[in-house]
Amino acid sequence: MLKKKTILLEATIDYQIDELAFRCKLANGHEFTAFLPRANKAMSDQLSNGTLINASFTPYDMSKAEIVI
Image (cartoon, rainbow, N blue to C red; front, side, top):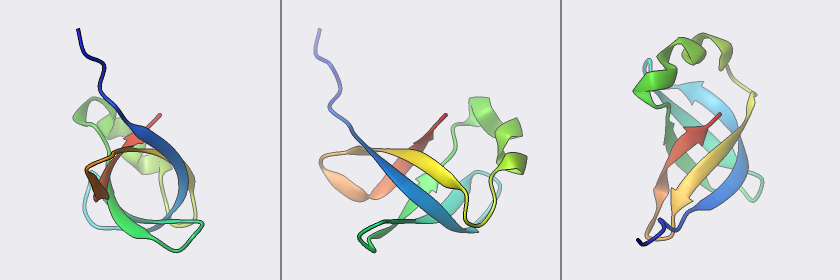
């Protein structure tokens, strides 16, 4: 069975787009959209501007990421 390749990086939240989507920025200035999985929907109340998160990217698209809790 093949394992999914992901890149895990630290980022900060700039602002909230909607309930499960956030605009984030890496330390090098790269901006992207991070999504919170539906299973962790209750966690969205704890995420605000300036919060440090871990973002999981695929090596193919660095414009979208999943927030890892």
